[in-house]
Image 1 (cartoon, protein in one colour):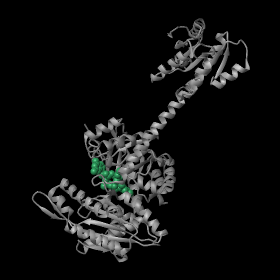
Image 2 (image 1 turned 120 degrees about the vertical axis):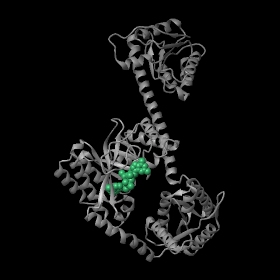
Image 3 (image 1 turned 120 degrees about the horizontal axis):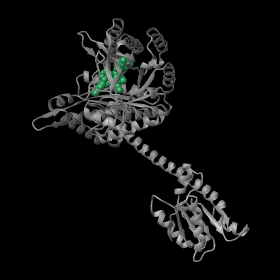
Image 4 (image 1 turned 180 degrees about the vertical axis):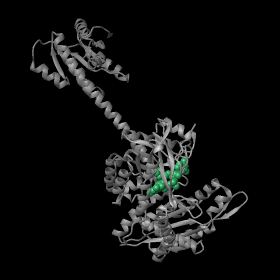
Length: 607
Ligand code: C2E
Ligand code: MG
Ligand code: MG
């Protein structure tokens, strides 16, 4: 047995496909050395120089095994004599076909018969041959058959490899999705469920209450004096308090309910199948436990204490999960205003009191700001990492307070959304952003990112206003990118999609803000006509020290790239994070390291 290397080429060839086929490995099997030499010579003359030989079936099996063990190569076709000592062609072929790994290799049987013989043909094909030829072999017969068999084999190999790669890719994506699901459902510090997971379960419970005849309850727990410890002892100690309280809640509730951390020092417990009176007893139990709890540091002992709100979910109730959460939260607020360390059961008058209190202040304040131009926009640079300059700025709204200080949107946007004032704010922002671009004509071709509320898509006035402003100012639509949060977009999928398409038709671009935070599944992304994904800042702030964040960010970038979308990383607060992001291949970066929001269009600063 030897590997024969011979030169020669097919006249007039030059096709790369043929060149590839010529590299493929041919196993020629015959017990007559002269026959083997002849076949090798014919093949070599046409450039097929990767030929190995064997002089019977057993030796041929050896060759198959040897090449199969070597991962990088294999036998691609067998030219097989039938009559041979020790192991004939039929037997070799049958054994070969019983091995999965060899089942795809084409076999051309070569028979001593000079003409067609039914019996030989039938037996050859039954044994697993893919073709049959008759001696004496001529080059004009042999080559086309070898080439076509090798072509088929190669096509099949490529397809198999692609399928295999796809399987791996899919598996990897599933792992990332599962990890995200977990992360997204749990609180990092305490390991408890987070607000999102609680809301999901609450949805289920609310639906069950509607259908079944059982009642459930949600307890909202606020630590009365967490802030004292946190301020006096620092965040590390504060974190320890939260972990200890979480562990106490977890062991007290056990499997009877779901315990979640809903914000810094607020927790919730969802209890299913429990009458209202039972839920109140349970809440009272927790209050007592927390009243007895003392947190000790080296030289001090703290009494933390809790206020608890209870919202019960009664059979037949038609309420939403978010309504239940709001009720429990409000009951907790009332418990606090009644002097803390108490349990309070929600009732309707509470809602009115709480909403009124905040609306009474904010509604006229927002109206006044709209009427008297007390809103203003500030601009944060978005750095194009390829061009290394800020081509975009994100416009962020501020309200100018009594003494001239700027109030951030988190204070008034939620109330505005709740009280139906958000449409006016959205319209104000769009109109002003375009006016500012118009006034800044000396700034060259900068473009603006404008945040829209989740309600903007129900506002029939938005599109006409936008068209009118663009016409009036002559600003081109591609200088505007609208941002909408992922959670809002997914919640109103159909409506949002429709509106996005209309705005994109005008030439505006679209970004999905806080991408990753409201994660449910990446699958909707394919259907969503956005140009840019803004990776949520929560994944970026700790990027340098958190390998999980790193792999999540990498896979988000990867997915964006696969879908032909660009990526922005927000909350870039240090050079180290920026360097890492550059390495990951993010398209744009934004954050305090590069520039804080400012009334002027300040260029991005970086080393
Ligand atoms: P967003 O669109 O995700 O905006 C990013 C927020 O992160 C901004 O807060 C910005 O000041 C802040 N930020 C930027 N870089 C960093 C950083 O490196 N570290 C940290 N920790 N924070 C950074 P801001 O201006 O308070 O806005 C908060 C949210 O309010 C925005 O989140 C957006 O959802 C909403 N919002 C802001 N302006 C408008 C507006 O004009 N209309 C509407 N509907 N919503 C707005
Ligand atoms: Mg934004
Ligand atoms: Mg954001």
